Image (cartoon, rainbow over all chains, first blue to last red):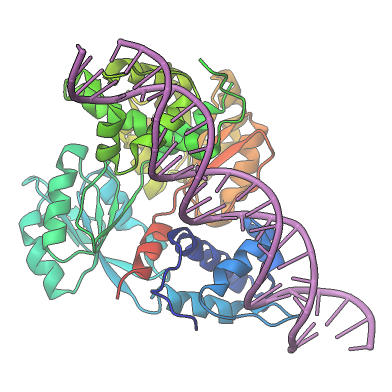
Length: 208
Length: 208
DNA sequence: TAGATTGTTAATCGATTAACAATC
DNA sequence: TAGATTGTTAATCGATTAACAATC
């Protein structure tokens, strides 16, 4: 395998999970082999791009035959470090926090929600999904004790930065932020954003 | 204003809502003027990119002074057609459907959820947020009667494509898809995707 | 073998950035 | 005025694609 840390474009890394998702579907459908062309049609991109992307990490196919679905699937899981289950915490026990804490889509894709936190005394000790809501003040001890690296922020925008600071101080390295605001975090920490309104607004540009 | 439909790169259109969001924050903070540099620092991108992006649509700033926050804010709202309120329907009354139907973040950003649909007889007629769940079969008549152009899909992956087909047939032009699967839709219809797991998986690549 | 498909090189395409004249 | 900042051009950078030798 070509070396991983050396300079794979971020945009390429971002497509690997999409490939993995497609391969999982194929796997579930009982498909044994696929090709860059078939994947490309499935995803609506070019087959050259898929082959180029994969070439950053090694050679996974066979000329004339294509790729073993399970083989490529498992290689991508390894490359993305998804050959294990990562614990994940949720901060914020409102609507969004409730939804993500109850979301069954994490299982078998590498993640498991292990705790839900909130600062509101009314919510602390209440039940969200199958979790008893804990106080934010427990975050540092909890994440260290459980070696948690991933967190989702689902608090109102005005509290998101302070929560992010607390998460960073607690050793969290990956933050998925649902609050509609840009976060500033130190270098080793990664942040990704989910704001459905941005998507709706973008599409609205093309309407009439 | 330079013409809009002519060939503005999609990637530029996608950044306009981000600029709008930052300007809204500044507006809320009582700021009257800003500059491409200040916005750039705020968003972690380059000031040249902001000026270049805006130049596709016209000239909104003043040399030496920068931009009127409210002025640029309102221009972007017009460009994105957000100077009105767009009705929005939710298909799927599970966890995600519940969360988006109850999400207060749509108001004042251009959208309002007007109905929630589901196919499950157990859910139909139940209450989700302030909405009585309707049957999917009502979608075509409802969207036409209410001139709805936007929909969110929050059903399990295996039903997402058939729901998309129904939405397209009902005149929906913008689909925000929460199901972890690629949809195929005809040309005038736009689809955007939200899959939190893709973001988590991407960040996990950079972990150890 | 013949057909299919890979991995990779080189060319193309498009997006970002540096630099600066114009001007508030 | 002097300082600041715009809008835009040209250069650079990076990503995508076309083409093809290698080979299963």
